[in-house]
Amino acid sequence: SAVISQKPSRDICQRGTSLTIQCQVDSQVTMMFWYRQQPGQSLTLIATANQGSEATYESGFVIDKFPISRPNLTFSTLTVSNMSPEDSSIYLCSVEDPRANEQYFGPGTRLTVT
Amino acid sequence: GQNIDQPTEMTATEGAIVQINCTYQTSGFNGLFWYQQHAGEAPTFLSYNVLDGLEEKGRFSSFLSRSKGYSYLLLKELQMKDSASYLCAVRGGLGDYKLSFGAGTTVTVRA
Image 1 (tube, helix red, strand yellow):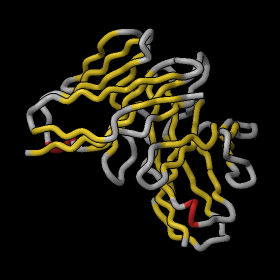
Image 2 (tube, one colour):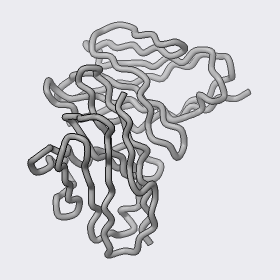
Image 3 (cartoon, each protein chain N blue to C red):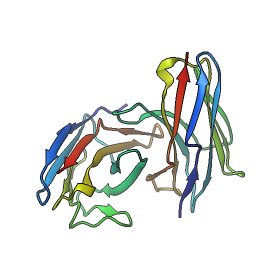
Image 4 (tube, helix red, strand yellow):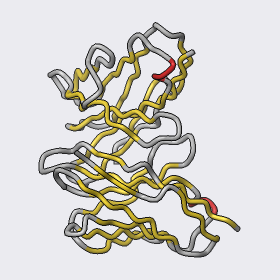
């Protein structure tokens, strides 16, 4: 299975600022996703990070708020822009291994906005 | 749209068996996943079903009936460390690798 790391693991940020979260995979993967898990809730897909093209966003999420980069097959970033307390959440990247039909999650980034 | 339902909470005794049901109504179907998530940690992959029937992996088994839009995760010989949230997730149609998650079932194992 792929090994996924995320940086930072946690952060406390002031409202109005932006935070960029990095996701690094130890092998090349085609499919990479960004999810959000708000306190006490399940996971919600933010977007699919596409290598070499713009990310595909789910309903309710927009590029201006959550810009995503995917420069290669092992790395992606998610930026949470102009943060408000409602953005306090755990942000997780995940990768799909189509050959194994398994989708793995990174350790997550716990964000608190004050 | 996607609609995935699972019970909110379940409690069981150490050594017992617990069955977590998941029903789904989705616009497409290309597999169902079960994940385990301990508090403060990322979800860990448990199982994947795409064909009808039972998949067994040690103490954990997962069942799928596509015609009924139904799956269950069976946890046998429960241990205290099995106390966690269990998430049911459905993957959309062919070529669509996105997952839609249920709200999760919190399982508490008591001594």
